[in-house]
Image (cartoon, rainbow, N blue to C red; front, side, top):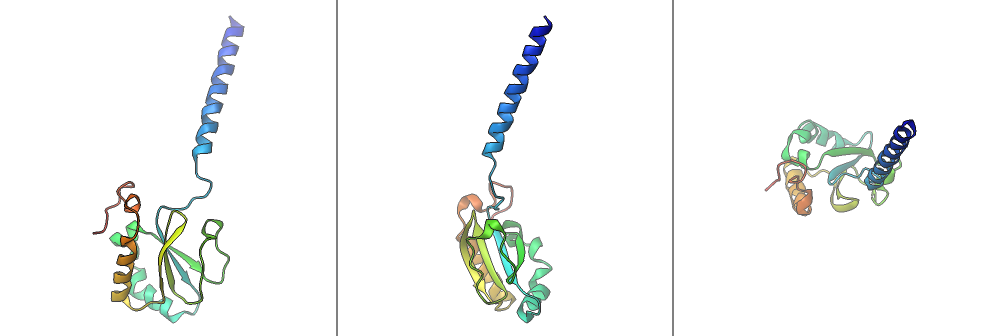
Amino acid sequence: MIWQIARADRWRSCLLGGIAGMLACMLPVTAVRADELIMLEQDGCAWCERWNKEVGGIYHKTPEGQRAPLRRLDIHEKLPSELKFLTKGRYTPTFVLIDKGREIGRIQGYPGEDFFWGLLAKMLERLPLAATGAANGVTTIK
């Protein structure tokens, strides 16, 4: 009877270990968001400071900011491994919309608040429907 209990415990451990292993294999290797707006900036950039003043404080509260959260990167720093596909360019600020490891579009420079929102809206229209937020509970932009 004791050997039957030990055998059942071993069987349960093997089963649970196998399930955990299968689930771990299903997880993505890198954590790339479905959609994200990358801002390449640098210290002393007057246009970056202007964007921060006019848009930076409210961006995360907007539908656009909910759909494509902002991620700031210094243009002089090494890119994170999940963004190796990205070409940095020379100008700051540069805004790059990415979806599942590929570039959807970019805005080089900051042409002012009105132009920024219009250009960003055009880029967001190019996102695949699955990335519009319907799958993750975020309202889509129309």
